[in-house]
Image (cartoon, rainbow, N blue to C red):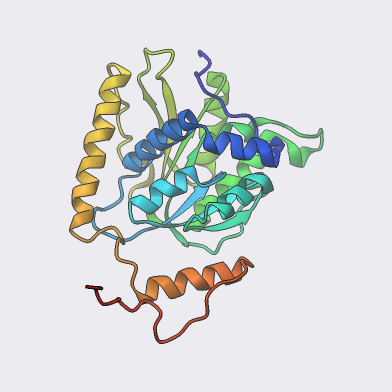
Length: 283
């Protein structure tokens, strides 16, 4: 299997400056956005219905920004404090948790309507020590078992990742199935060395393995990009009809201020009867 054009280094090794540099890179932003849109497409959520999503390996919130634009509420987990710090500085909408997913997720059963993950899953295949609890199978088992519990029935989880061999794909899919998931691998542009992308599309409930695995994109990469652009135009059109939260009313402002206070942000304005009040036009 050919190596993809972009492989982000393990996030655990990011320092503050590297995290900011990675986030500010426009090429990284574009690649992250394209893969997030594709993951949401594979997630196949009901249109016009609110959803609460888990962003696994959220990093500095690049994928979370897409979730915001699409009108979803979300929670992000990541192993790198420096990346989460950048996400806080950028004031992303989602709640953020420092978490090594290889030690399992600590969310209540049935918390999420779906989950996405961009360029993260392959790092669970790295054994940090020789201890059995650090082995890839053990970490994968903990992760998939707790993820299955955290997802509602029915729902999906979609992972874009970079496997280095077919054996890695087999290991990941077999452990996910043992944890109770249905689904399988979706490959976009399988005949392209640069554009090829691998997704693991997992199902919870709703027939489990009887659900139909989505088909991968074919043809040239430009065709896929054009498809993404058409989808974005449809979403913008739908947002005008009220799906996306574009009006920042009093409730939105109060929720945002409370979130800032919980995160320890200084100089948050006090609530008053004037909070969120529309100003009269000045003539």
